[in-house]
Amino acid sequence: MKSSRCTALLAVVVGVGLAGCSSTEAATTEKSSDYAELASSATCTDLRTKNPDLNGKTLTNAINPYTPGYETVNPENPSEYQGFDIDLGNALGACLGFTNDYVSVGFSELIPTVASGQADWIISNLYATKERAAGGVDFISYSKVFDGILVAKGNPKKITGIDTSLCGLTVGLNKGYVEVPLVEGVGPACAAAGLKAPAVSLFDSSADCTQAVLAGRADAYMNDINTVNGFVAAHPDKLDSAETVMLDYTIGIGVPQGKHEFRDAVQAALTEVQSSGLQDKLAAKWKLTENAVAEPTILSVG
Image (cartoon, rainbow, N blue to C red; front, side, top):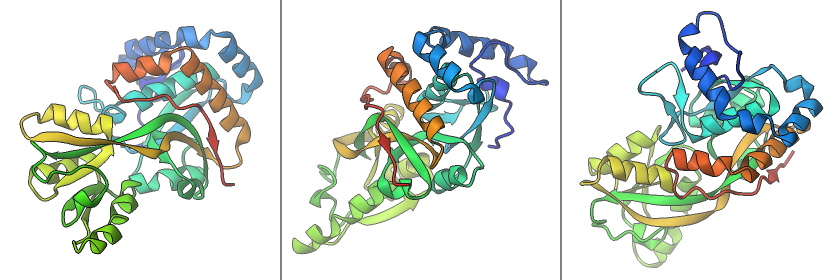
C-alpha cells in the first residue's frame, strides 16, 4: 500500500476531499458526521485554537495493516483501510482539525519511518516500550495489553502461558514483537528443568503465524487477545485460545521525538476521546472486547 491512497477516503471534516475521488464523497461525509459531536466539544474547539498549524493539514500515519480489528485493508474497498486504530486516528484528527492519509510499511519500519520524517505519527497497535522509544519516538498510551495464546483446538499441548509449558514446543511470532524476547526468556527455566527451550518461528504477519498453527508447523501463536479471538472465531473447529496474559505494556501512539506541541495536543485530544466514551464505542464497534482504556500517559526517552 502506498501513502498516495486518496485522503478523501479518510477525511474526517466535511468538505475535505481530493480531485478524482468523487466516488468516496458519501464515505467522507459519514466519517465527518461520526465525529461531529467530538469536534464541536469545548475541549476540541480550544485545542484547534491553540494548535492552528494543524488545522486543515493532512498528516501521514505509518501503519502495518495486518492486524484484524485494528488496521487492515477494507476487503470491500481495497483503496482504504479500516479498524479501531484507523477510526481512533480519524477521531483525533477531527478534534485537532486535520485529516489522515497512510503509508503501509513492515512492522520493523514503523518507528524508523516516523523518526526519519517520512510519516507524522503511528497508530498501529504498537506496544510502547523504552527500547522502541529510543528509536526516535515518544509514545502516548491509549490501551492496556492483554495477550492471547492461539493453539490448536482443545489445546493438545496443554499450554498455560508464557512459561515452562512452552518447553520443547515451537511458537510462531511476528518479527519484532515484544513476545519474541518473552518466549526466548523461558529458555533458562526449561534448561533448569532438563527440557529444551521453546523454538521461535518468525513471520511477517499475523495471518502467516496463524497458518503455521493451522498447519501444525507451530504449536502456539501469541498476540493481542482481540486478534487471537478473531482468528478463533474464523476457525472455530480448528483453533482455541489457551490463555490470556496481561503484559506490563500499553499500546501507544508514536510521535516524533522533539515535537512536544504535537505530542501534547494528541494527548489532550485522546483524553477527550476517552472521557467522552468514544474510545469504548470504537472498541465495541470493532469487537475488541478485551480493550481496556489506558490513561494517556507519555513515555519519552529523548
